[in-house]
Image 1: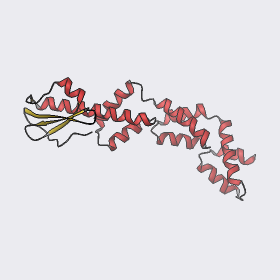
Image 2: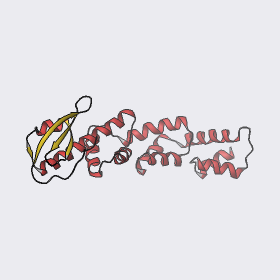
Image 3: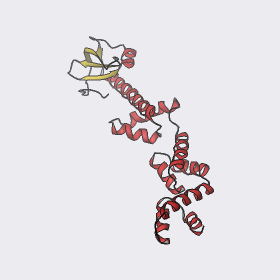
Image 4: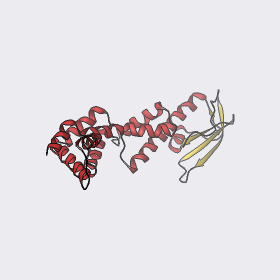
Length: 211
């Protein structure tokens, strides 16, 4: 939820309305005497102790707005994580697409990471294990896929090196090669090119072609 009809308040403003929003009343719209309004999460509003008729200065409003947006971004990130695992980079991209500033996102994800809900190493391990079982590919492709998911190159390479042995890669290359040649005729150059596009190295390709 984003701030509604907001402007940059100047000086002290009077709270003219405090209205519940959301099915569970988890949000409040706070209206001010200059016509602006701010969407606040319930716990932030209660902590600040803002009620109709109160005067609020612009500095307090800025702090409240930042706290509200940070907590909102945090809850949005947790919602994404409740559906599937994400890397920190992947969550950041999704939150940016929903209009959150980079500063707010970094604060929110810092908190989510502290809670233990973001673990890029665990993500890489789980994703890679599943990928290897379902899609035979070479190490180069697997590293590339992990990086596209937001895993840093060093972590992507170390995870692939740990979980995908040379023997496993050879078996994957043989599986792909068998599918390519089943009932079809290919020359060596075409097969080499197709295996290379699957992320297999020259050394692995040459090994399975010789077999």
